[in-house]
Amino acid sequence: MTHEDKMRAAIDRQEIKTLIARSIIARDSALWDDLADCYHPDATLTSSWFTGSPAEFVKVAAEMKLTRHEGEAQMHLTGNHWIRTNGNRALAESDLILFQRRVIDGNELDFSTFSRRIDMLEKRAGTWKIWVWTLIYEKDRMDAPDPDALPDGFYGSMDLTGYPRAVRYHCWRNDRIGFPPAHNIRIKGTEREQAIRADAQRWIDGL
Image (cartoon, rainbow, N blue to C red; front, side, top):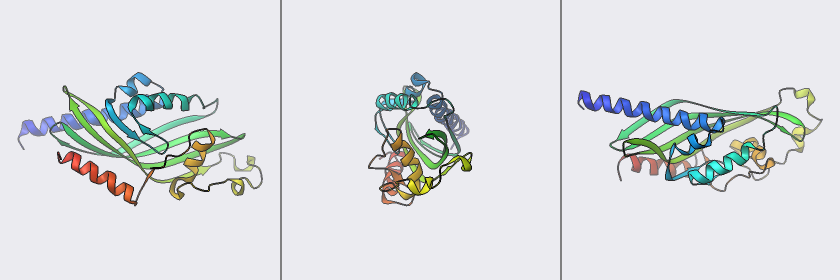
């Protein structure tokens, strides 16, 4: 690889890292036009509760934000970016943690969800945008800022039946606010993870 090639690859990786950060901050900040601009119009997005196009995702994400009330908050944090490029194609993998505070049935709860973000990107007309975005979920947890404020038997009363064990609290929370889990959640160590990684490898290999 020539010096010019190395410089071009470094610039591409920085542009992609900035793009991913923009998509996260735009969503948490309700900057919907900026969020939509991070994706190609024909992109596919898959999370624990959604599979569809960028336009559909922006619409439903905006609806989800409307379910938050005073005292509730959300923040995504990402890091450990591994970005590979091959011409006008790129594959980016990064760790993602979602922190969210919700008040459910009058109970203040903090949720943390750990996942791996897989982005397949394509440069069109000289601009990188995301073409496929998928989350592979690893684990979650739920805590009460004030455990003594929870009613007796609260944890035992939670019906977690049917939710993937790795992210049962995450899915329970989303279900309670009107966004039930999707049928195709990708969980770490499953065949679904293997399938998305195989697709991603074919993408970066140009196949």
